[in-house]
Length: 437
Image (cartoon, rainbow, N blue to C red):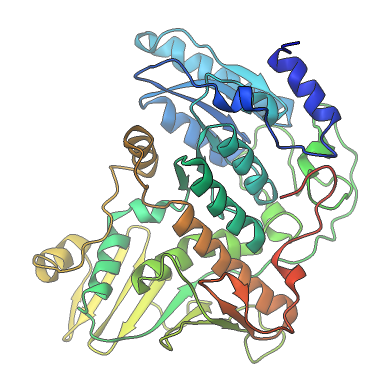
């Protein structure tokens, strides 16, 4: 028998306890018909993916599917696509469909790429399934919920040959590239240390139970995380205009360490030239109750501090050198050298980088544009699984230092603990059946 895709998904759900994310070779091998447009699907339709959806719609993309476990967000996303096509008849008629189960989306052979903006605890599972289904992936940061998942995502991209872009979009902002080029070219002298202004680490969830309203598949929202009762702080119903606080709780996210840390630690890694590496140890703050102050220590002795912003002008990331400092945040830039201030990245670039020996990746006009260009030419994007995976590992190591209040010794090449007293269970989580990475 040759089952339909829908009957396949039904069978897949029944067999999920054995292999919830394995797609049959027939579906993995299917490819879309040649087209100038990139056919995309969007999974997790909260505030972040609504913005991404609106942006991608204006590009060389046709949105064929939207997926969310909340029927209100799903319907809203569907309406947005339909309205866009009604307002832009030159784009043709809408062909969008709504789904509650991401596996139905991935089973479609006419979808080229997916954009994933679910809560963090779903990122790796859906990403790996999408890669194995032959899709290119734009996945929001942090790329994974734990270290084991980061290793598996990097391995799966390599095995499948797909393109993956992590949503660490500061890589596509000129002020961050210029700051890192100044550091890498020695404009501020020998680098001494780096500080990143980032909020607090994640903590266990202790929210009280609330009644679940109709239209939300709460069991599917929880997915691989431990079973717990519904609370609207984790998943506000319907179409809301804020970023929900699930990210504060370690079962689902990693606090601000994994949220903005995935942006700022990422730029620190870029400036240090450590995109394919990372720290050799992470030290907790001396004050056992402090929620900032952890230090990532690199093999050359340089440190990156998880800071509250003390001594910084703006926040963001500050590189301290023997001949000057450079600090950068979104839309804000400050280079101090030889007693002079430069508050324009363009001015600093013209003054110090005209003949620079080291040039870093210059993204396309935007992060989504960079992804689409790499889907077309099959090259490595500016925030690939390598950059995204190693930055996610940095975030998770910092959280481990806080959680266990001890120094975490790490081998960034082997991606393994170097201290046998560090429990290998810290690399992963206990997945709720039938889900597993």
